[in-house]
Image (cartoon, rainbow, N blue to C red):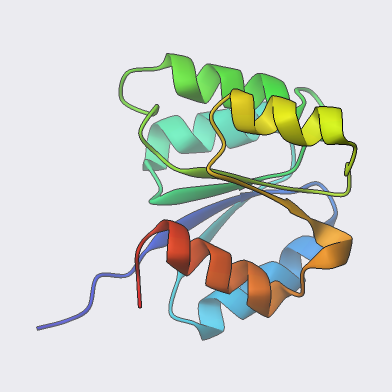
Length: 127
C-alpha cells in the first residue's frame, strides 16, 4: 500500500526562503504548493484543499491574519490546520494568530526548516 502524500500549502513571499522550505518538505515526502501572496494563498487553499497550510503574516495583497480569518470562516476550509510561520514575534501577534485558529505559531528565526517539518508532522499526527 502506498503512503499518502501530504500536501503543504506554503504562503510565503520570500522566494529564497520558500525554496528552502519547499526543498526540505519535498525531501521528507511532502507535496508543496507555493503562493507568494495572501490572495493567491487563499485561492490555492480553496482549489487544492491542502492537508496543512504554512502561513506568513507579512504578505503582499492580503496579510496572513486576514487569510487565516477567511480560511476559518469557510465551511470546507476551516478544518485545515494552519501554522503561522513568520518573523513577527510580538506576544500580541502570537496571541492573535492562535486566537484566530492557528494550531501553532513559529518564528522563522527560531526554527530551522527541519524543525518546521517536525512541527508539521506533529500537527498532522504523522510519526
